[in-house]
Image (cartoon, rainbow, N blue to C red; front, side):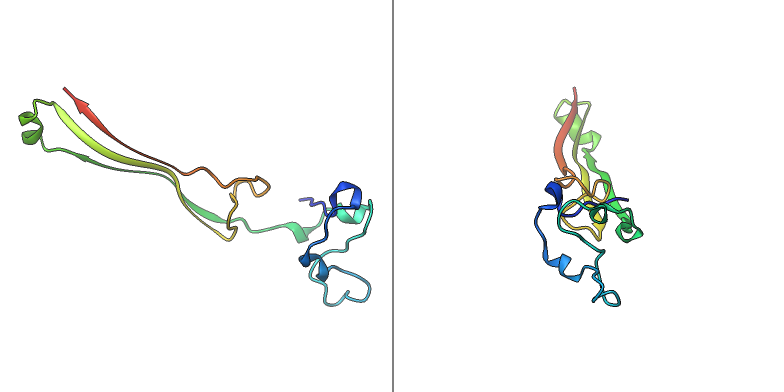
Length: 122
């Protein structure tokens, strides 16, 4: 995996997490790879540092439904009636909050869709 720091030809913003970057003085205690101001191969070097465990568990789809009893629907002159509630992307358990573990570089979390309805047969 390849990350790029200091975008815009090496003139991008520095962030607090960059303070732990590798330098000759912090070689033993560095918590972040070496960075260089300006265009430098160091700012986009491929490294195992960027490998992340993106394990997650997702409830992709669920539906709850209830069919009215036949003796009740007959009184309403219906063959059948069923109420339902359905949802997609309902829950995701992941270390990555506010982002989709299937698309860590995306700008938006996955869409959660819920709908309810009734199926009536005359």
